[in-house]
Image 1 (cartoon, rainbow, N blue to C red):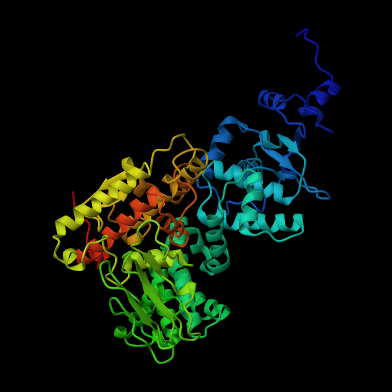
Image 2 (image 1 turned 45 degrees about the vertical axis):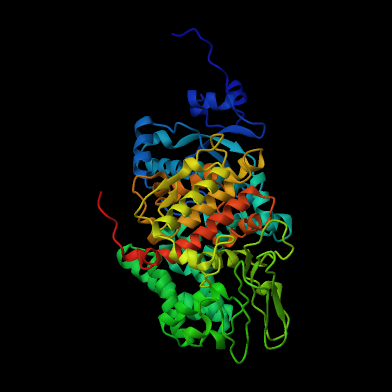
Length: 589
């Protein structure tokens, strides 16, 4: 007989800090003893009958873990769980539930016990105090996110459940910026723009049903949401309210996508966007080609009326000028360097001046409703030398950037370079000038090592994921902590310029490049955003780059201006590279 004194029930109880343990199951396991040594102040070891523990019903991961059967078999073979599950209990309730992850392990142990494995009748857990539903939701989100177990839809729905709980606890509504700050305090990193895409998905795409689980962050943020907002703006021009747009147009398109997914388990972002466009066309009595034309006009002229949108193409899309309509006249003033000073007035007498002495160029649109030029109508002003007092900046810099890249006016020329010189320049010279200015801009922003060149791409280049100064410190944080202040915005500008967020363009990237691999997998892309490239800047947030260009003391702005000037020349010299690019197959290596 072993002479070692057996500990009393009181001693074991004290060591485990448990109330009413089962007498036959008093001795804690080695794993439990190790766990007891690392308990926090508000935690204690507790042994529970497995039937008294239930899975957390609001777990962020909505579908069963793909590795569930493997995890269950591993627990069966070990006769235990390697890491004790933390549990808590709501006041007044009988059952415990996981407090921060552990649903899969609890479900596996319950099934094993139900199958007759008595080793899992009583199980050791770590008990932690219940601090409210928001605390539990946040803990589960963090645990699942660390394990990379959350897809886009899981993140979107769980974070906005958390937002509702926080608002109830705080007794006030939270803006996205405020929510981002509160979430960060609880250990969750999610910027305002990312939260905006989550909110859009939860509010506008929920009728996709199970197809929601096929949504990706890049698909929603870079394609579906911008397309939806453009169609919504167009529908408003035709008197369709936001509620009607959602009911008559969006729900119909979502229902078709849902049925397709239920039949084939296949979901296509492109098909959904196409259905949204076709359904909008039916709702407003136009064909799909007319809808595309109207969307193109609204990109350049967001204040256009329904009557103007319905006019023939040549009324609103002449290169270099916009002809007046009967109901809403526009005046466009264009001048290139070296011309005599001009003053052009609209029919109501408002005037815009171009200063020949400084060689300035201004493109402005004046509203005849008031007879006065509005700052919100000014699309772009550039070509100004440092110190010009005629420089203007658009209220909507995103529209200005779009106008620079795709506008029909052929007036963005190199300073002091006549238009005929650009026309006569060889294609090779135009391309070389663009690539030289591209490299100059990238070098200014310390991104030259991220540039990659490929003749198969429309602009001959794309950008790789950059190397950050510190591991897991993304560019946006790096730029605020003493790093190059241009790297963050410049990378996102170049990425958008190269078109890597367009699904059709993305297919032309080399398959082995890191950025293509990341963009193809939502979890990998979220990791890249969180640890490398920083808070996403898609087309709605690129306007800050315009302020660089408008500042004559900003060296990156000057390099950016040269790049954009070269870009317009490239698009004019190589129009075939920007038409039907999605139809051009990728060449085999």
